[in-house]
Amino acid sequence: MNNKHFITTHTHTNTHTSNMAMENKKQDVVLDGPKKLVAAFPDKELSLASRSVHADDYINNHQAVAPPMHVSTTFRYSDDPDKLVSWENTNPNAPYDSHVYSRDSAPNTTRFEALLSSIIGAPCLSYASGLAAFHAMIVFLNPKRVAIGGGYHGCHGILGIINKLNGLEKLELENENDLNKLQPGDVIHVETPLNPTGEARDLEYYRRKADELGCYLTVDATFAPPPLMDPFQYGVDIVMHSATKYFGGHSDMLSGVLAVRPDRAEADLENGKKGWIRELRDERLHLGGVMGSLEGWLGVRSLRTLELRVKRQSESAQALVDFFAAEKEKEGSLAGGLVYKIQHASQQPEAKVEGSWLRKQMPNGFGPVFSIWLKSEEHAKRLPSKLHLFHHATSLGGIESLIEWRAMTDPKVDRRLLRVSIGVEGWEDLRDDLLQGLQKLKEELGNWDVKG
Ligand SMILES: *Cc1c(COP(=O)(O)O)cnc(C)c1O
Image (cartoon, rainbow, N blue to C red; front, top):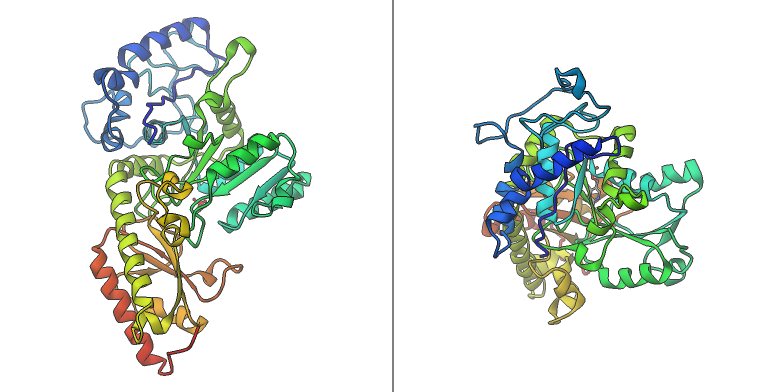
């Protein structure tokens, strides 16, 4: 992973800020800002695990170890009339936790963003949901055409709405002819790994295409959060996540994230460029799709254990995929009789090839989501109700394992497909639960040995 410590300065270094305030800000950064933690370890970069626990410490100006939850939507201005500056409300006692109105910034979401910026390695903004983040990204880049593949159906829904507004054209990502219709300023949007199969797409290839065509490259990396993948190694312009999934990790908060390639994020004030983070934040103030404070608080709680959870979930998923892929090949086995195929990045041919794009792109595991196709729709529909350790529900990324007969929410997906999201339970227990579920199916549906 690229472990640079990126810093989003969430106090008001905006275009309204006076020069004097800017001078003070510079000093603050050196004295007690996010750089303090980096400076304390001059010879090394802190691990992802350590940053997930401490990257927001600089914001905390209270003795409490656990973060407080602030529900306030609005924040008092200075008592000193001579210090009043438009959209600038820096509290000298809490320079990194200073706010005006919660549609612009608020304490809990600011800490969430500070952590994410360090974890992802690029400045981040949070949104009300993954789709709110995708919407904000498309509004910001304002392309005439977007090349997009299968993947999460909701993103296609947003492109449909934008098409209604301005005629935005949707092109097929995996069709070379379509890709070549892109013009400079258009967007190549790659979801990897893909929903619902968990299969990966080659970011190096799409970066080359984007460069050739003068397009932006955006990536939906929801299925492979750190430490599984770092899309910025491929020069991606904006990385989005549905933070509802692994960043939230407990099936109890909606959130979305945009992370901006550091050179794009930075302001170049001499040339009148505010930088993409500032511009996106200004647009978010008007789009209004901000996270709530409770979600920001839950998000901070969740990110503390991101690495533990994601590593464990990915390893367990791998163990299950390996087990069932092997079982499926055994003559007379339960899986051999019922399972048609298993899809996961680890099942792609390149996963077996040392030095392949896939091994390079996902060096730390292929992710906790995969798909199992049963041989008939009826089987797929009935398996979830036979399981005890998997909830039959949509979504993914939580600590509890989920299975979804995907036809419930995605009408475009094959009706034999079950999407599986592995939680933090013991993988052998999950294996045994799936095996007993298949056994029950076999008994219930008698004539089960259908040839696929
Ligand atoms: C869930 C999901 C989204 C949408 O996120 P929400 O937080 O539900 O709005 C987008 N992309 C992918 C890959 C997802 O899994």
